[in-house]
Image (cartoon, rainbow, N blue to C red; front, side):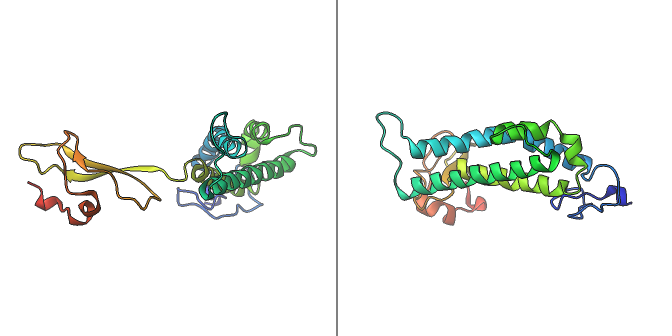
Length: 206
């Protein structure tokens, strides 16, 4: 039925159209995507605050600390500035779609203004664009706030006699350096880090 169609291109229910027909009254988002929109507005202030801290730390170093002026620091500051500008522009455009004169200024007040009109936004013909746009901005904010996240990986069981613990390694996503000496949860050393991931096979474990 047409009433099951959802305007979000990223709808996970299988009913996505990318554009809801304007002749259909009622919400343009399915229940799941409406919940995602509500969650996006709930998460947005936290991610904005994290990116604002990245921007502030790049522009004004704390007392006693050098400015983060290296290439990576400058890239992080530029990415944070770009994200904050894009978010402000996006939110303002949606505020202007709901009222003639936007009564608030700043990204966080505008986000709160829109979040209070969730039902109205869910019925908007371009509601799918709003949800997908917020999702993209939040994904970018995650990369800005955590550009090199630490990943924890289980490599397999320890091969030390009588040990039933697991060997784990934590590495930075964008690091070219090998992880530190590998060991199981009990501290038994394993293969040297540069060779560990290549040589290990679970069936070879003792």
